[in-house]
Length: 281
Image 1 (cartoon, helix red, strand yellow):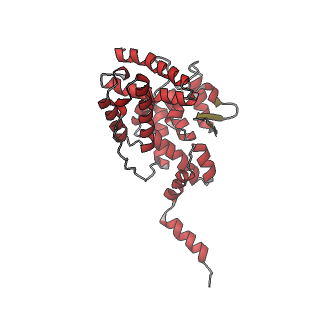
Image 2: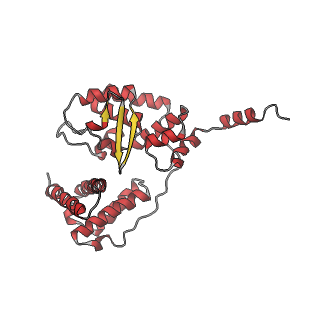
Image 3: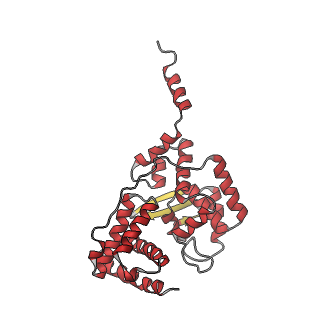
């Protein structure tokens, strides 16, 4: 363990205590803590830490988020957390004049085809890691975000009622569990006794987003693709847009409607037009 990781934990906790004194909500404090832990993890790879906060490192982190194709909203939120942390340190000038470039997003929604979907599940099952099998099934069959997956506790899962509950920014949504997701979750949960659902087999600590992303990279998928696949398969199965939007936790239903557009093709449009206007005149 480096000196920077030893410095970070108490500093982040002191920052959280300060936020509580500033009357910030528990959910806000939780979000700020998570963002600072991500930033610390990134800094540690560069051989430094949040205790040695520098403007050049903050700007470099913004560029890193841009390279990761994070939305402007996400980058602004992260910058806001670091601004607050700099204010806590008494060094607000470190965040003055940060440059945040608009990210050019690919509007095409990438999801798994039926063949790719089956191939992914076959591969992860063949590898035999019960934790990874459960992670892939939960992401594919519930559509939750990777951050929501990392924050899952046993209390969020009701195997008797086949339900998974997500608490996010004071919004709660309940998602039905498929039979497969339920079975693999139960097998994995029976393998450990920690409150956090997805944990390191070595330390018992809650898994980080980066760890899960790295695991999924080995299967040539991302958490976003699995989330898109969940939404797309429900839309393709004629589940109404409002239901899909609620299950996915979309704040704007227009985000969900994009999956309808990707479903449309020339043949379907031609068939609809022919049906609509046949025998007229």
